[in-house]
Length: 287
Image (cartoon, rainbow, N blue to C red; front, side, top):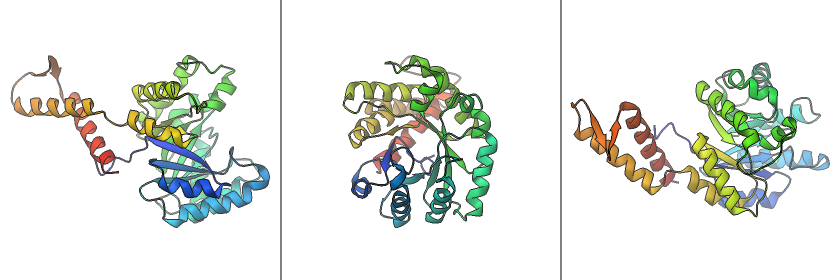
C-alpha cells in the first residue's frame, strides 16, 4: 500500500503565465500542481504560458510534487498545440477540462500516444457538466491511462443553474455520483475548488466534507489553502492511534471467533481500513 499510494491531498492551480508563481511553487508543501493554460491565462498570454508550463514540467525541479499541465479544452483553438507540447514535456499528468464522454477519453489517449507522451504521463479528466456526471463511470473506465477525475464545481454549479451555498446541498448528488464512479473504476478523485480565499473557516469545513465523502484531496486556488487542506486529508493523530490499537486487538485475538476493540466488533474490513490509515500516514510523514 505505501508504495502504490500517491498523496493528492492538495493540488494547486498555478497560472503558467506567471513565472514568479511557477518558481514559488517549488517551495510550497503541496502534493500536486496543475500548471494552468486555461482559465487563469488570457488569450494573448497562452503561447508564453504554454512554453513556461512545459519548461517547468520538464525541469525536474519540483521534488516530490506531482506536476501536471491543464491544457485548453477540446474544440478550442489552443487545444491541439497545448496537448502536443505537453506530451513532449512529459509531466506527471495532463489535465483536460470538460471531458464529456468515454469516447473523448479514448480520443485524448490516442492523441497522447501519437504525440509520444511517455508512459508516466497520465490523463486527468475534469468532470464539469451534467452529462459528464451522468456518464462518469464510463469516463472513469474508458482507459487505463486515466488516473484521476477532477470535479469542476464552479462550472457544474453554472450548468445546473444552482447556487453556491454553505454545505453544497445542490452539488451533493453530483459529488457522490462522481466519487462512486471513480471508486468503481479504481481511479483517484479530487474535489473542486473553494472560491473565497479569505474564508478560512468555510474552506476547512468544505475540506472536511470532501474528506468525509471519500475524496482523495481537493484542488486549490491559493497557497494559503495548502496547509489546512493537507491537515484535513491526512490521518489525524487520533486516527493513527485508533488504527494501531485496532490492529493490536486483531492480532491478539487471532484464532478467536469474535474480536472487539473499544466495544466495537472488528472484522476484516475494519482491519483493511486501519492498515490503509497507517500506510497513508507513513507516506505523508515522509514528505
